[in-house]
Amino acid sequence: MDTGKITGSNGSVAAAATAAADRDGLKQAAMEFEAVFVRQMIASMRSAGLGEDLLGSSAGDQFRDMSDARIADSMAHSGGLGIATMLLKQFERRI
Image (cartoon, rainbow, N blue to C red; front, side, top):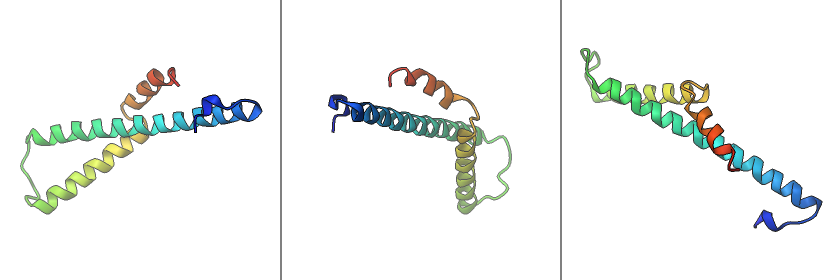
C-alpha cells in the first residue's frame, strides 16, 4: 500500500509509522554492514599468518571463525568503529 497517497489524520500517522520503520531498517542494515566490514578486517588480519597455528585443525579454524564473527557482531552493535553511525547520518537525510 502506498502510504504517500493516504490523506487525513490517519495519513500522517501512517507516514510517521513508515518513516520510523524505514529508520529502523536503515539502522539494522548499517549495523550489519559494519559487522561484515569488521569480519573482513579480522579475516585479513588472521590471514597475515604472523604466528604459529596452535590448534592446527579444521575444527579449530571453524571455531576461530565463529568467534571472530561474534566479536565483529558485538563490535558493530556497540558502535565499535562508528561506520554504522556515519552511514545513518548520511542516509537519514533521504528518509
